Image (cartoon, rainbow, N blue to C red; front, side, top):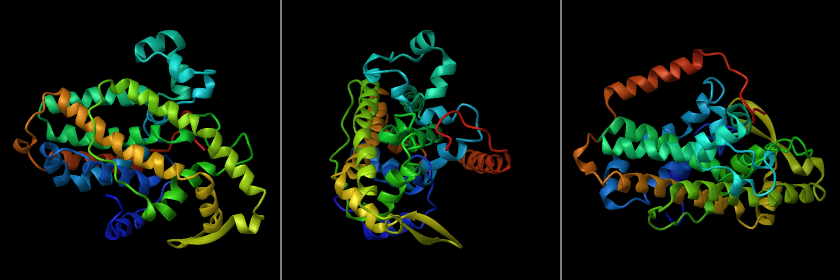
Length: 323
């Protein structure tokens, strides 16, 4: 894991990119690499299902604009609540609803509460020895943890729309990993046990928010040094020619950030493994070798039906971060 295997990088680069969250490439990469942080008692089960965890890492994004209530699970606008919000907001979701009101919470995002809730659900799935639910929840939980590691998921200015930097969202979390992650160091060591997982979720959002100033400021500074034709270029994506940030601008931005994207991506890998491991330990460390090693036919049918439903369901206006 110290360097991304060339065949794995090639495989993931062939996957379709998304403008949301980390993008399909990075979300699938994070879940896949997190498997290798697990202890032997878990890794055999998770490696047997690594393709499931990789492919379904992006399912929450697929649901985002068609399933009511999905969109707020991916972000938290800390700047909507004033200074030190990451340390002042209630850790209990019912307490937050009582203090702020659920409409406001859903408008400004609930990602740390979602991570904490799903960790509890995954622990219960381990206790029940339910292979399908363990896999389903592990894939989804990995997605939300990864989202909490993205600075632009912590602000109302999530796409630079208030600062004349529209497009920075996909640039930071999709374009840079797609271009440069082949050179990243992904060695994280073994997944640690989290004594206070809810606090870790909130600390992760606070860390991401602290990086936000650099994300916006360095892009603004570099934009004064690059002419428009050097900042942007055109590339072929399938049968479509798209305008995108140039490779030269992307490399200069990545260098100005001093490896910030790599650090956050690596943090996401470590945390996904840590939350999976913590849920398993808290469930009493059930013997995963005694569970079915692959999803049931019922789970595979559920995924197929969900995919068809998502295709057939009209896209809804999502609450927040819809641009």
